Image (cartoon, rainbow, N blue to C red):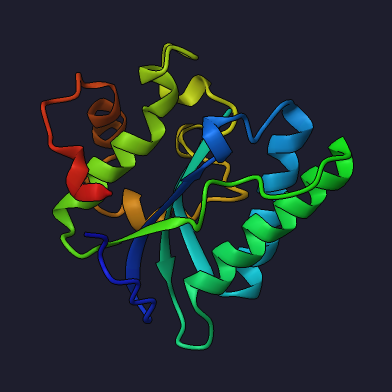
Length: 185
């Protein structure tokens, strides 16, 4: 059973969705860039912090925080996926839905799961065999954490958990321990 979508101030959520029939939702670099541009636009509009993200060819993951009581994360993700679908349909001369149903949302209550979720999200392209290191994937917040240059991601929330940035980097490259990731979905 999916966790309730309580989008209140200072709540954390794992948002994820994939293409219909697991089809690609990102065909080339311009698709990824358009999605990221819209992500920044709507995070500012709806006062949402993006703590971590990864855009994969046929799906995406976002780890977000609601920082005000004025708007809901639901509006953020609804506007983002609708705008992306409309733009994609126009660009490729297609019609209909792009995503497989509504975006899933998991309320993350336990702070111990923040780092586990972060590792799960940024290591997605590594597990899929697209890159060797998380920061090598161009469409993930891992590169922002490693380069200290952040356009999309609000890195301070995660980094303040660690005494040193080196500790954070070491955690990411450690072999993943066995963990029941189903608690994050």
